[in-house]
Image (tube, rainbow, N blue to C red; front, top):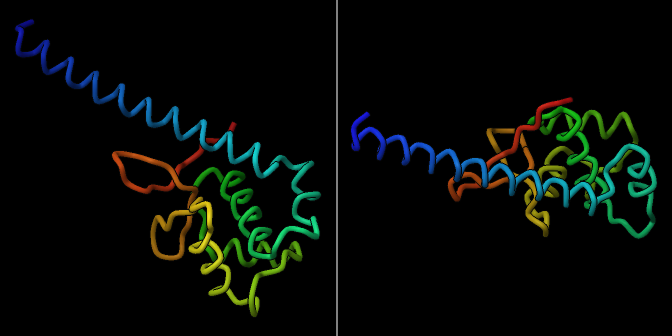
Length: 137
């Protein structure tokens, strides 16, 4: 193996190392979100019915829960339909547009629009806002 090939391999390893560090940081951020929002199934019911929690925050918590359950970014229409089924109030006049506004204006900046009508949880990759895909099980 030539010195040039070794140098090229070292560069590839450094790139992979940076990607792994980024993934590691993303996972720690998601763990913090889970801890902070108490999104496990048992605590979700309590936190979503807390009278001190605004309807904006309730739908945001609900959206995070759905994204994590799905394992990938979710269409706003699916979140909206599921929220209606589970009697989670949509802020404002209760339209799908109000749900989108609630996600866009999240003060903690937890959501990212990964494609038209689809939102994921904020993550970092090469300095860009991206939706994080989670693999189940």
